[in-house]
Amino acid sequence: MKVFKFGGASVNSADAVRNMVGIVQAHLESDPLVVVVSAMGKTTNLLEKLVPGQMSTTGEERSVLREQLETYHLDIAKNLIANDNSLVDKVQDLLCRLDETIASLQRSPEHYNYNYDQVVSFGELISTTIIAHYLNHLGINTQWIDARQVIVTDDHYREGRVDWEATCAESNLFMEMAEGHQVALTQGFIGATSSMHTTTLGREGSDYSAAILAYCLGAESVTIWKDVPGFLNADPKYFSDTVKISCIPYNEAIELAYYGASVIHPKTVKPLQNMGIPLYIRSFLAPASEGSVIGNYHTISPETPLYIFRNNQMLLSIFPRDYSFIAEDNLQAIFGLLNELGIRVNLMQNSALSFSICIDNNPQLVGRLIEGLKSMFLVRYNENLQLITIRYYNQEVIDSIVAGRPVLLEQRSRSTEQIVVPCR
Ligand code: ASP
Ligand code: MG
Image 1 (tube, rainbow, N blue to C red):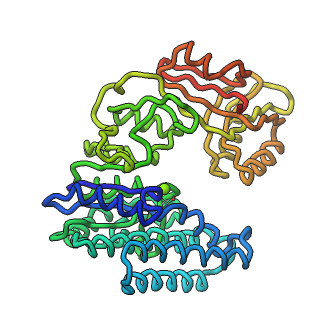
Image 2: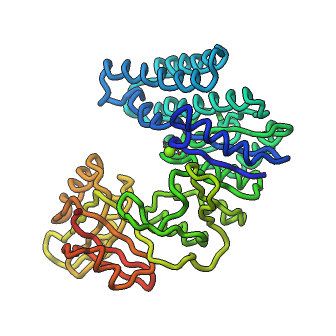
Image 3: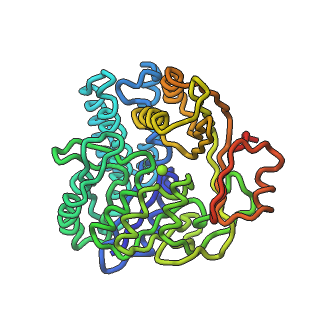
């Protein structure tokens, strides 16, 4: 059994859905093909603005967005299957349920994360409803499966943590439902608590959903269909001459995702590694080309430097108020605060007199962090920075990336160079 995952960009229009369905059709086998799909296009971003308690959206904006959501999905549905009211009715039913859900939720801030999951999950419910209906319309025998019946998480809303035992047990149900069908189509990104409250797995979590299902179903492989030709050595947004990496060891992929490579969701690789399931990354724009594979390898091939850029970074330098040494109790206080605010440190360095951390410049959190730190320490900071990680570096490569910019922080291990420089 194989698992395919299609993200929002691969199903963002009726033509995109036709292309995606063509890929599915070309890979049908005797076993059902498990297909995991995200919300269409930028639907998740739109739904985020409709979450009750989302203060920045005005009432007027809400009605415009709600209208956009409806028009966008109905246009795709009607374009895929002309003169078929049953699909339009299904989509409209879901939109009614969305309205009812929004109306029923409590608006106070402590309910925000819960509300978020109840609302945002409709993106995946609508996309999979349309695509399953279309597949069946084409004569491809498809079972729509509600991922919330299978993927069991705790009640950590917006970042549900998977209950592996319960999920693997529910996977039997998934198999039963899939049995006798050519395609078992389900939603990425969403799950539910054991008491059936909808949860989500964190933004871009559909890759992770595919990995969870593959693990629990004992799949032979996972393929993520993307708008890039495979795993590239740098983000093509920043680099014109990227190199495609054909084979990547599991651990390398985990490291790269940790440093911020955005090609796959960071939690995706570990469950696959545990079961030795290969993860293919292929292009939905060029489905005949080979792509990349993450699996049991010792080194990347071809061997070439890999670059990961994190923009909008901030460097904080923290000094004891009496200009004494930075000691363990100081570090404990700093990390306590970071942990409390849920801020991840992307790079850190200490000297005798100061401790420096490089973090994402998230305006809401950073203000609170600085305020908290200032009650104990002297704090200096720089904004508009870029953290560049280079795996398998050499001096020439570093020089060309730095391009004469001042290096504010640098850390080097045998395989990895990390530098913080002002954004270009
Ligand atoms: N639709 C969700 C998001 O946009 C999940 C995903 O696309 O992976 O974050
Ligand atoms: Mg996506």
